[in-house]
Length: 123
Image 1 (cartoon, rainbow, N blue to C red):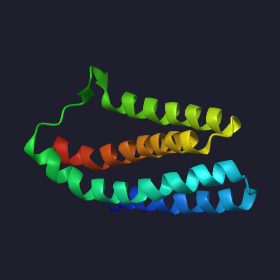
Image 2 (cartoon, rainbow, N blue to C red; image 1 turned 60 degrees about the vertical axis):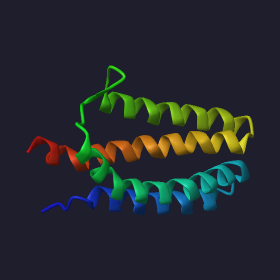
Image 3 (tube, rainbow, N blue to C red; image 1 turned 120 degrees about the horizontal axis):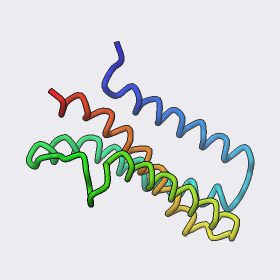
Image 4 (cartoon, rainbow, N blue to C red; image 1 turned 90 degrees about the vertical axis):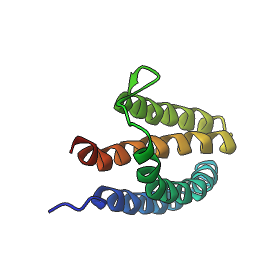
């Protein structure tokens, strides 16, 4: 039986493998952007993983945000983050590329969180 947090554990393992790959290719701009983004993302992700169920209990959780389906918005954040990362990595702007990486990681985190909370809201 699949545990509730198996996808999140798999994601953190994959994030570690991505970090190893970034170190291996030795791209200074990508490395600087990636590691500064991950340093912000991981604590925020762990905190949000713990606080999201508590915060969502108090208010109704719809499937739309700003009139857009939640999953569509999360995929858009992911793809937008990838585009920003690639653009500014080529322009050698590590700080802005790190914002794109945070958006990419946040989009993935949102998809994981929605898949974790979906069975709980359907019951």
